[in-house]
Amino acid sequence: MMLIQNHPVPVIAMVNGLATAAGCQLVASCDIAVASDKSSFATPGVNIGLFCSTPGVALGRAVPRKVALEMLFTGEPISAQEALLHGLLSRVVPEEQLEEETMRIARKIASLSRPVVSLGKAAFYKQLHQDLRKAYHLASQTMVDNVALRDGQEGIKAFIQKRKPVWSH
Image (cartoon, rainbow, N blue to C red; front, top):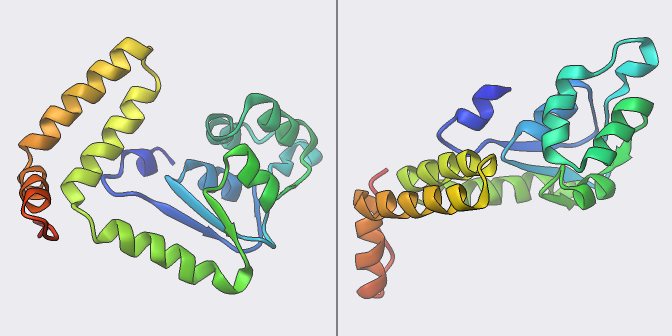
């Protein structure tokens, strides 16, 4: 699960059904999560005497504490709409549009500069656990590093020349 956050490219979950325990943990760990409106999410281990402690790590970082704890203490599932409301999901779509929408997001990200996306992803996660001053310092340094990238320079040139950038990846 830790590899997902450290992976240089975004990891997208596509869910169509019930995601429980480690499945719910996987969804909570992904950078982006798209689910069908028929999906639901649960950490039901407590019902069989096995508290979902490792899923709780990812869940507690993806949703508000009280939501995570209710899920962990009761084992009851939440709907896709509830999961969206609480931040476990990025979007909910009708079942018949799930793959199309997930692939649309993936293609959009894949069309962008991989070095820029990777730099941005790493900086985003790194700044999350910093105080505000340190987070802005880190983000400012990341912007400087971004401008120094070949694709950063290409993006600026393309913007000035009013053309689409040609990325290095």
